[in-house]
Image 1 (tube, rainbow, N blue to C red):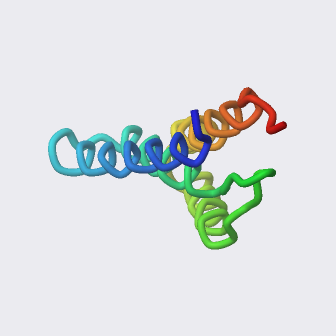
Image 2: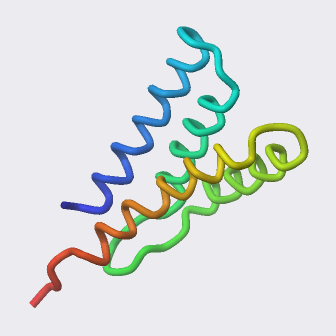
Length: 98
């Protein structure tokens, strides 16, 4: 599977989760998880090698600092870890180009 497609789907899932946990079932842990998932999926772009996207990576780090100060840091880190890790795993497991 294409790592860019995985990252894009995880980012969209994070946005949908944010809307769900904001409007339908207000839950701070769910909001932090969804926000971490959305920003974690957008923080790296994949070509022949993954490279950081400075805007989303900076926003992720800024919100991580805010979550560490007043928030739900474990849920945010879990979402960010999934958002960063799953596309990276798809990139590592792809078939090498010949």
